[in-house]
Structure formats: C-alpha cells, structure tokens
Length: 503
Image 1 (cartoon, helix red, strand yellow):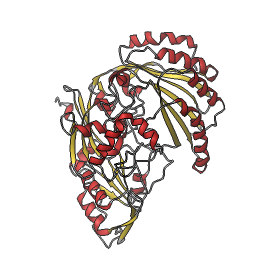
Image 2 (image 1 turned 30 degrees about the vertical axis):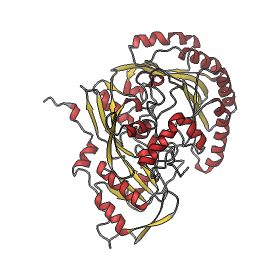
Image 3 (image 1 turned 90 degrees about the horizontal axis):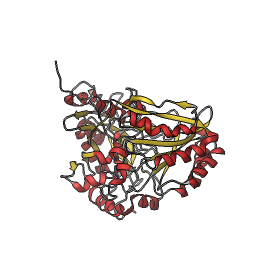
Image 4 (image 1 turned 135 degrees about the horizontal axis):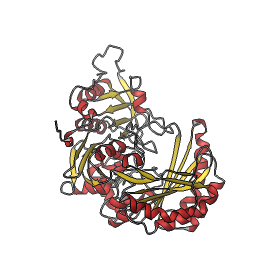
C-alpha cells in the first residue's frame, strides 16, 4: 500500500492528540499521598516571593492535557534537569505541554500570577535559561510533531523537536534546511536566535528559512506570524530570541540535498597550528557557497591539535577538487573526510536526546569581520599556556547567503560577520566550577577585544551595552515590539530586550 509520508506525524504528537500517553493527575485526590500543601512558594519575574494556592494549581492542572509537575513528583527531577549541568534549577512547577492549547493555559497562568517563567524547547540552553528557580517552566519537549510537504518543500515542526529529528525526517525526502551543528539541540532556541549551521552559507540562517510560526504571546493569545500576517512579530522572532512569546510550531523552507555529502574533519599536530589556521583562512576567503568550513584548535585527552571540518553540499567531485590544495598541509593525524549521509555529517544517531551533558560547559562567542593574523597568533599563543579546562576555540566561516540578507530584513543584525569565534571550556568536577569559570573568563578576556558583538544563543551577556550593540540599529525597533507584545517582560530569561521603563 502506498502511503503519502507527508502525513506521517511523530508518535509523540499522536499521544498529544489522543490517549496513547497516560497523564497522571496529581490533584484529583486532595487527601491522598499526592496532595499538595495549601500553598506552594514561588517567585515573580521581579524576584518577589509569592504563594500559589492549591486551588490555583489544581485549576491549572485540570486545564492541561499534559502533566503538571512539582517537587517530589515522579518525573520532576528528570524534567527539571538541563543539558548543561552547570545549572541546577528547581522550578516551583513544570507544565509539560502536549500542544498549543496547553501552552496558552500555562502562559495565562504565569501572567496572572506574574511568575518567573522559563521556556524549554530542547533544553540545550548553554546559559541555563530554559530552567528557573521557584518559577514556572513551560516545557515543550514532548511536542515532537513533524510534517513534511515534499511538493512544497516545506516542513512544520513543533517546539520540542531536536534538529537531528528534523534532519532525519526531511532527509527521508531528500530535503534539508539550515539547522545547527549538534543533533541534540532544540530547533526552537536555535532558530529564534538566528541559527547557524553547516548549510548557512548556501541557504542562509535557520531564521532566514522560516516561512511562518505559531506563537503564544504574553497576553496568552495564540497568533500566526508570517510575511502576510502579524508581520512585525514575524520580523522580531527571526533573531530576536525568546523575547516575544512561546513558539509552538515552526514552518521551514526546505532545499534539495543529498543523498550524500562530502564531509569530515582533518586534524594536525598543534606545532603546525599557525600555518594550518593561516592556510585555512586564506582558503576560506574565496570558497563557494556550497562549502562549509570551521577551523579549530583544541585538546582532547591525548593532545593539543589544530585542524578543520568541511562539508560540501554540491557535487562531491567538486568538493574534492576544492579541498585538494589543502593537501599541502601534510599528512593529518586524523582524517575522516569522505562521502556520508547528511544526517551522519550532522552527527545524528537516530536516538537524539537533549541531555544531560556529563561535563559542565562554559561558552563564549564573538563575531569577526575578516582574516586576522593577530587573531591567529593570539589564539595559538593563549592555547599554548591554557589550563586543561579550555577545550576548543573554533572559527565558523559565514558569508555567502548569510551576508546577502539586509541587516534590517530580520531581527538578526550581524550580516557583516565573516566568522563566529566560539570558546568551549568544560570540566567534570562541579566543586571547582567557580575557579574554572574565572580561568575561562580570563582566557576569553584576551580574545574578546578582537571580536565585535556576539551570538545570543551561546551566552546571555549581562552587559546590556554589548547586547544593544549586537542588535545594532534593530534594537530600538525590538524595544517597541517588546512594548507591544510583552510590556511586563514575562519572557525575560533570554538575551533580554527590556520593555520601555524596565531598562
């Protein structure tokens, strides 16, 4: 029997629509072991301590098709855990939403009680903003529905989908769109902050490939935003982060790709780092849009090294020809550049999970306008004497389709960038986190002056001047839209654009 796969829906969505997923109602028996106290301590977005009554919570629970969890409930500890174990959050309540109607109810509850509110898509927030202490977490991780329309080359995916899940589904039809570089990343936070990826030079950022969204704004209304409807809101969510509401579904433009791409890594001894990075930046100046390249210096358990990752999304033979001049770098320590499926090139395993990481992770990022010998020298010099917690410095080449979009066409301003530089530090001993963070900050402090602005998906910078600079001339417009759609700053756990009067 021939079945049109466009109408396949992830099993999690079937559970949301029917009765396949059992939901335990915690509040049905007010005298049983699951009974809640008369009040639960919580706090508002401004930090004020408040109490939520049992009646209020029972009403919220009754309005949801998904689960409502509190401390002590089965599943609470797993649900509150974030991908980055640097952050150990304990929310008062977790609303595990099964659909847009659940999100509406959760937002209305948060608004009515002025609750500190976090939104969790994939839970991959590097800076811990997808969780909170003593507030409400609106958890979309069970919202996994994906629908692919091959003739229109479109995909609609719910807010809890991970990029590896969307890659796998779209590649079933020989299609793809720009998403990030780690398959366990949630599509929601990735796309709202811009969305770099191995296809961005060819097809633009993830946000450039959005055609519409469904979003619950701070007034508790579900809105559709596109180029034809709520255009101002659609402009804002393409790069403005989670400031404007909870996106329950994303509609992406897809592009033909595959079935295989030329992709992989080549790693060289660290004593070649300067020549490797210099040669690679020269190579990256004039590459075609189909070529993705990321440069790196780093350390694993064995050694320091330098090298690059490449992915060519055009004809593989053209990719081999383009990479041939890099053979002058000599024989690599490691080389897995070969034909592989795009899903494999993205790191997908078919069993994507959003966490948690075994290591505490520290990230910093900054944009770079072009080639810089000073930058290469500084990166290599600093790495030579860096502490073991400093694992990687990466330079992701952009340009191409990313740079051909006007800075004010979307909220994502930094179309001028040639590279994103990313620092990754990590460690497993949480008791040493304070000293390790200081060491990582000192390392980044030497590199940051060589950058301008930063990628809001890597860290939530507390310096509001740097945030304003990152949004450039788009910032005043974003403030006006924040005033319109979230004047009380309900959605503040993000790279926060404060409404007028709260700056």
